[in-house]
Length: 199
Image (cartoon, rainbow, N blue to C red; front, side, top):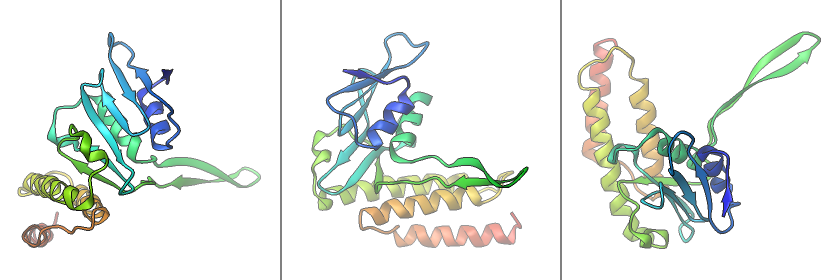
């Protein structure tokens, strides 16, 4: 079994689909705790919980929705790195002593969806008809939760909700779905209210 120096590096290798057999990353300062992966699945701990699973039949990556369960920082980082390539900031030399900042935006190389549970092994090969109700239920619950947080004007702006809403819409599109009309209407009304409040 190949060992990776960190859970994030293991997740990056999984995303690149280069893991053969099984691999693991031991978590420092946590006795006996591991993230384990094979080519199609990443597990939390000693295979106690599925964090990410591939459905090669549909060309999708299925990720555990972070808000559906209590997850530690290592598991959250593992999920994030398994589905997305993070943004990178660098410098580009324009001339002698002249540089400019360059940034590669965050990228999700493979279509993904998030679900409240990935425990069922059949998810690895289920058809789109079986997967859609699970995706829609999970996404609708998350959209309601997000809007609930913004019913009262917070100290911050509205950008966080807009970003999260766009991500949910993209995941729904990945499964051939769209957000329920009643939630779209509620979201539009919330945006108008926030604009009127000037926040």
